[in-house]
Image (cartoon, rainbow, N blue to C red; front, side, top):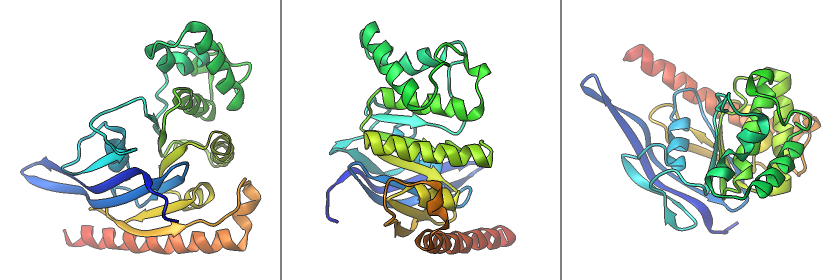
Length: 265
C-alpha cells in the first residue's frame, strides 16, 4: 500500500543531559502513519515510546529530526492532535459534560453547539446519565471514557494515546479496547497508540511498530490483517495467536538485551 503518510516522523532522536552525561532515549526513528490508520508503538518499558508520542504531540522537542502532519511541521501543541494519557487528566472541578466541552469552549464554539457535541460523545462512550457527575464519582474506566470523548470532541486530525488503559484492571481494560475499536470504526480518526501490552497492540491495530530497548529504534513492523469490526473472540483465533507470538518474541529479545546491558553497566 503506497498511500502517502498523513503523519510523517523523520529521523527523530531525543537525548537528555544529566549528572554529567548524555542519555539517548530514542535514536533515528522514521515512521509514516497513513490517513485513518490505527498504528501502535509497542516496546519494553523505558524504550522511549512515550517520549516519541510527546514529540508528536508537540509537548517535547526532538534533539534531531522532524514531525510533519499533512505536510506541516509540528513545532508545538495544536488542536489538530488530541492526546489521552495513562493518568486521569480530567479537571476535578468540572462535570463529565463540562470536561468534554472544555476544548470546545476554548475554541470559541457556541454554547448550544458545545452542548450538542458533548451529548453526542457522552452517548457514544456509554456515559449517558453521568453528564453531571464529577470525576471523583467515576471509576477508572469511566474517567478514560471521558478523556477519549474530550479528545474526540475537538475533532482532531490525529488521536494520540499514551498507554491509556495501563492503570485499569484486566476486565475493564479488555472492555475499553473493544470500545476504542468501535469508536475508531465510527469516526475513522488516524490513531497513534502506545502500549507495552502485546495482546492489546495486536487487537487494536492495523500496524504495530516494535521498538528496541533504549535507545529506542524501530526494530520491526508487523502488519495486522485481521478483519474489522473486532470483538474479544478474535483473541483466540489462529492468526491472532500467531501475530501475538511474533510480537512476544521480538519484545523478549529486547528485554533480554536490556537486562544484559544493566548487568554490564
